[in-house]
Image 1 (cartoon, helix red, strand yellow):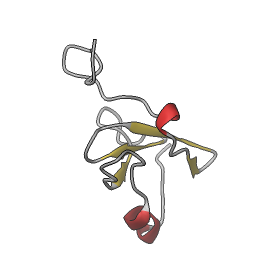
Image 2 (spheres, one colour; image 1 turned 60 degrees about the vertical axis):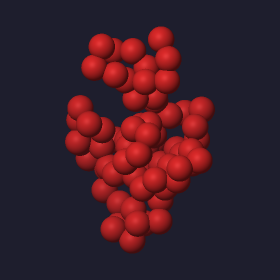
Image 3 (tube, one colour; image 1 turned 45 degrees about the vertical axis):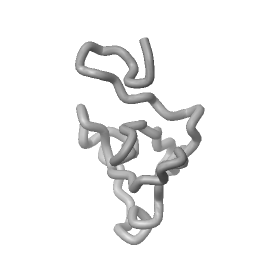
Length: 73
């Protein structure tokens, strides 16, 4: 199921990491996923019951092509 948000809401939502980059619906692997992905750092934030959970502790870190997390082993 794809996440659908009002365009105006997507304009103001931002990643809570220090760079505060915009978010886009879905993930790189699944554009229909119930998630929002940071356009800068690649963190993926879950959307539960239509509500984005924009907490760094809840985010999934991006992975590198070899499957490791981008920030370390």
